[in-house]
Image (cartoon, rainbow, N blue to C red; front, side, top):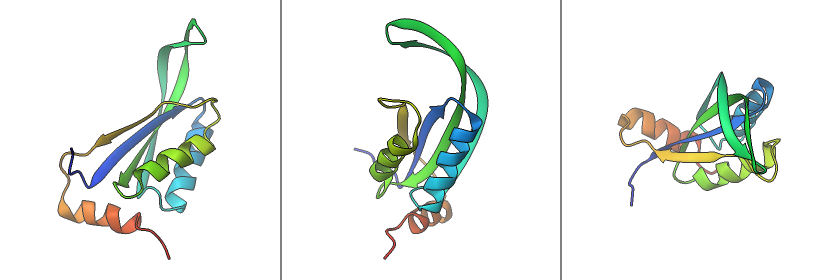
Length: 111
């Protein structure tokens, strides 16, 4: 069991605009403290029983343990791919206390 305070959550999208929309929305909703959009990246994958390839844009989001699962649910709602995109989360094994405090404070439940 991890004791990580900060999580890095990633997903890929078919366009830069999709990635930016997800980033802006979840940060504005305080499900992530910050977001980075990178790309394009060349991807090779299996889809619907076929080998595929194409360009993707990655959105990387920093969040807290408290809202990580809510963030994943929101990404599913916002993402254009059905039935669901790749969403991966990795614990940040080390971060300064200042940064972890900021992430936790920013993503705290709002009354």
